[in-house]
Image 1 (tube, each protein chain N blue to C red):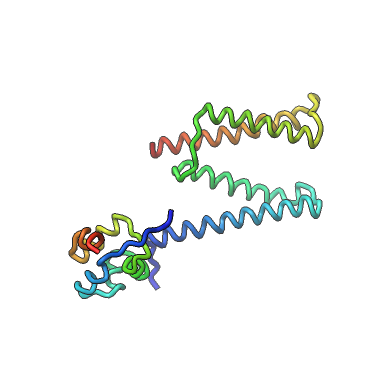
Image 2 (tube, rainbow over the protein chains, first blue to last red):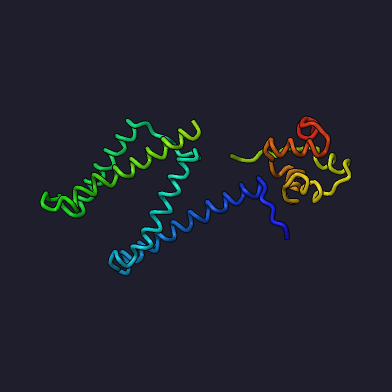
Length: 136
Length: 68
């Protein structure tokens, strides 16, 4: 049987792949939450799943930004505001959950809250910029 | 975005050219199902495919996709 890949099958395959990618990501997230909060497993027990999920989600967003596939591109100013808001949100939520961070343990408390969102915002801006260069 | 159903004359043009759906599909490099769906108005082809179909059937784009 000859396999033919035309514009309709390509478009249909893309839609089907997107739906099942979403379902897979939600499924993996569900498994991680179940193992973390219901079974009470340590982080090492599901770190592989977490890495796969992070790769899948961030890879998907980065690819959509790069190929200009309908993810809004923010200006540097908007991105800086989103970053500040994200850091503030994390700081408030984590402070309420674990208490105020102490300076002697700043590598495990303050640093991830400041650097984590910066890496996300930086990556977002980088792929937006690469996407704009590719198709202005 | 919801697909708009587009009536067209592809089926008549294909029959007039003495071709089956499979023959037209082979010439256009698409599946037979794609031709069937275009003929029934359930799939909106790209302009590239429209041009190819017009070329194969010896019709203009207007004759195939506008007159209906």
